[in-house]
Amino acid sequence: MANDALIVVDAQVDFCPDGALPVSEGDLVMPVLNRCMSAAAAHGVPIYASRDWHPEQTLHFKAQGGPWPPHCVAGTPGAEFHPALALPASAQVVSKGMSGRDDGYSAMEATLPSGQTLADALRAGGVTRVWVGGLATDYCVRATVLDARKAGLDTRVLTDAIRPVELVPGDGERALREMTDAGATLTTADEMVAQSGS
Ligand code: VGL
Ligand code: ZN
Image 1: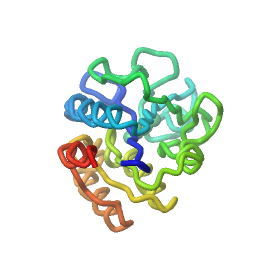
Image 2: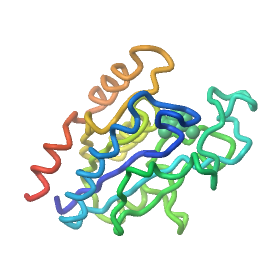
Image 3: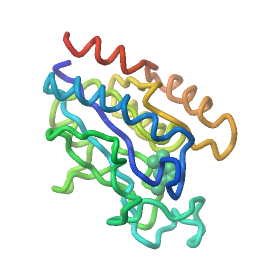
Image 4: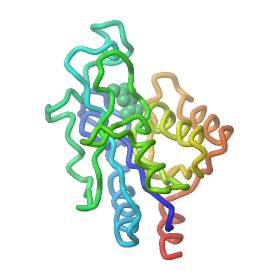
């Protein structure tokens, strides 16, 4: 796991049941992500937790012509990480979707407090393999995984730690196919935990 990183995508209140843009069963990924984060933290694997962090007005929202109801507005309760997500002290938060001019789906373009992008941080850290879970399969997980593949990373999708929005039924399955077509590997939290010792 020496050159690994774990990317936890948008495990936020607004993407869970009762949130502003609810993903069916979105809350069920939290315990699975927690297992992955514990294993990562125990083995010194860097953890990056992305958050959707939008301005009040953005082309991403319906009122400005975008596809989505308002969600994850920076600083609001809906933008908080889900209360069941147990972020280890070592986890680094990266924020995305802040410009107001684009959707900002990919966590690879999210930025650390320093302004460095996750893509640059991974490169600087010599990361060659990433494990990816979170919300939602057909948007931010998909975009993150496709960007990780473009960056040449060995990319493992944690299928039991993701759930789709499915604006259109079948979007989740289609996204998984796009990810594997791009060279990503589907795996599970159990497999990640099992490999963590090696
Ligand atoms: C997301 C829709 C809108 C996501 C973010 O995190 O997948 N989906 N904004
Ligand atoms: Zn968003």
